[in-house]
Image 1 (tube, rainbow, N blue to C red):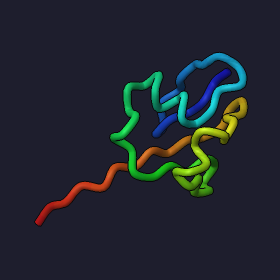
Image 2 (image 1 turned 90 degrees about the vertical axis):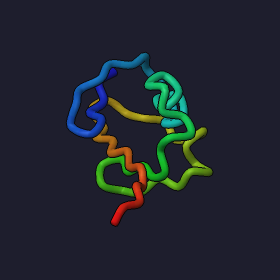
Image 3 (image 1 turned 180 degrees about the vertical axis):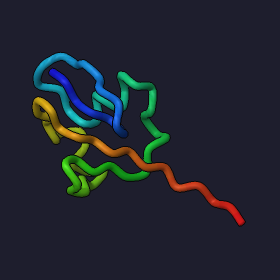
Image 4 (image 1 turned 45 degrees about the vertical axis):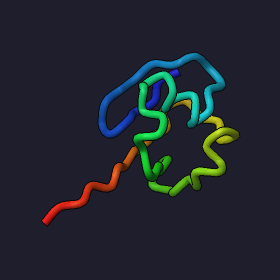
Length: 66
């Protein structure tokens, strides 16, 4: 399955959850927000949210600065 993550094409096994995508990319615990096809997915849904072919996933991390 192909998923575009922050503009970069990545390949995964079929029927993968959003949480599993984060685990495979070693981003678990580092991502604060996720949007699939421009729709925010709440963190408590990441474990059950099934990604689909050609989904566009945006992963966000909040950074403080001045």
